[in-house]
Image (cartoon, rainbow, N blue to C red; front, side):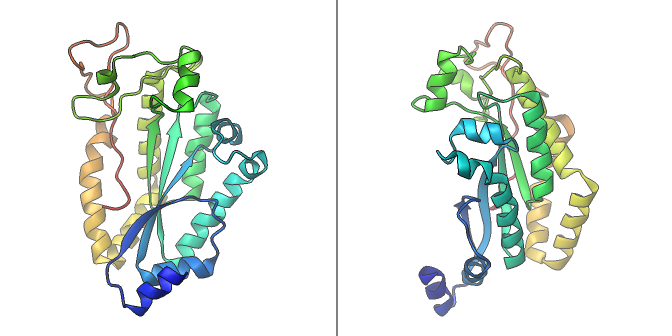
Length: 248
């Protein structure tokens, strides 16, 4: 609050975006003050719509907080919207206790939250993390050649296959989730109204649509790429599309 009030006192004219958690317990007064200070958008990792997946991620290291996580997420998004701050939601599938049903819960969660923009990505288990060690112990990692973890374009390539979900299915789900979110009639109407009200957002929306449209139309798997000339046997490298970032 002290920082926000100082920005207001100095008549800050530069809008800013920031990473944020949904479970910080932010009240309307704080969010409204931040918006007056220049806060335009928060990028938030909502991750999953399934409580069991959130718990397995140890997102809060507290089962009681995990149990209330989705309730807090909905409250946070509504308070941000009431305060004039947009939310870019980040959703991830492929956690080690993921199931087809939990992925559907994540898509449903994203659509009910109604963030301004959203991205859906399959998990990347980076070396040095607990998730990587656990995935390796369970033999879920399909490719150990680090070059194969990215496409030629430098985009994420899913390399985790779970007992009941292949990494190809993770990418396909993200394609479908992206289409379902961005092409829903209610979302398109919302974006049209937003564009008519704010010229700056109109420019942003047009730019984002141009970037995103090719992935919505043909998906992430439109081109199988070879990385370092050595695709994994029976496991073609998959092009994973970027999602529009909330900041631009």
